[in-house]
Length: 253
Image (cartoon, rainbow, N blue to C red; front, side, top):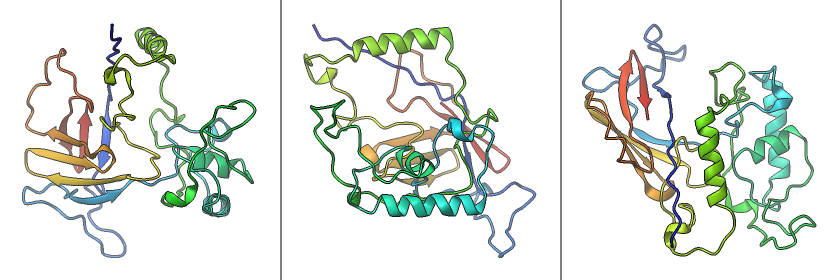
């Protein structure tokens, strides 16, 4: 019998900040927020998502929501020196954390080590794009501690059930293989990829479409106040609905 597990991801409030608040329509250098025919900020274009900033704030920086410019320059210099193409490929938050720890070598979890003698090894960092550093120490700004809030009891039960299903076993069919292995299904939000991390945004008066380079998934966000799909209908990227709050596009999934 094929075992399946359906997980539901709920993004409570995913905010895409258009460009600038309504009170500041242009910058000091004369740049002005581009707008569509209906007056909203024009988000269209191809955007890179190559930030090294971790989703959650590391414990070492618990009381430091922002780094100084000097600290940012130091981390960027360390990362450039460490990830020069010879080390294992580093994904997710590994680049930031390795630079923060001032490591002199990096090996991925796939490498052959005493703890993992069956490791398959990994390709090197030469194949990945450069990541950029900024002053933030977490992508999460609310709550102020920069951390994902603790799971509810129901969330913990579902996580435990998923972990039990995902224990190593011989797959009975393709449905038992992860979505990533089958190159199916993206992730919201998509952070720290290291490659294929571009988005193309297409916008109209009643919807916004976000095409992700990774997996070539397209997330369509209606803006016309239509109701959400029935709870029994589940989509890989969730069921998104958006609305404008001033110059900010608010997306609830």
